[in-house]
Amino acid sequence: MRIEPTPIAGTYVITPRLHEDDRGLFLEWYRGDHLAEHSGQSMELAQANLSVSAAGTVRGIHFADVPPGQAKYVTCVRGAVLDVVVDVREGSPTFGRWTGIPLDDIHRRAVFLDRGLGHGFCALTPDATVLYLTSSIYNPAAEHAVHPLDPELAIDWPTDRPVLSPRDAAAPPLSSLRARGALPGYAYQKVRSSDD
Image 1: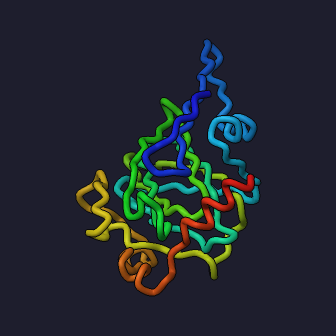
Image 2 (image 1 turned 135 degrees about the vertical axis):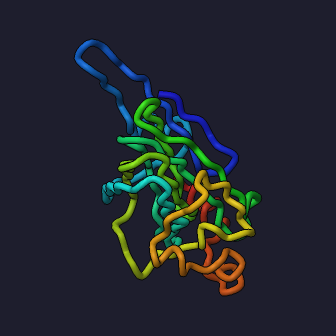
């Protein structure tokens, strides 16, 4: 298992070793001890989610109030997606930047993103199936969204006609959330990480 940082602090790409033979395939797609050793990040598991999306569907950009926040560990078990992490942490040196990581059922990579980061993805194939572990249970009152087509973010979604949920289509731009003081702070992130 290889764990590599991305340009967004607190985000890592995990590439597993694939063990293939005439019976099929085996891999370890999550190892908490390896994640902690390589990234300095730990993750308590509280919930597991699975979504199936039609090609062209864009889900996100979602984030949760910090604290407690919600770390995620994401993989695509069927088809392919472009997984996107957006730094929505006020005061972060990479605030407003995003990174895209291709996830698919061939390479079987995963993405870990720490609390306070925004997350979304675009389905590249029919019935793209994404499985993700979260560090806290779903709390609708603490969940927020940034409009995925916000020109300020300028995310290069790999579709000409993104299909959005009503919630995502009505989400405000990043600048509006920033003006309202509704974004997580980077200071919390630095304090929490140094205390781990």
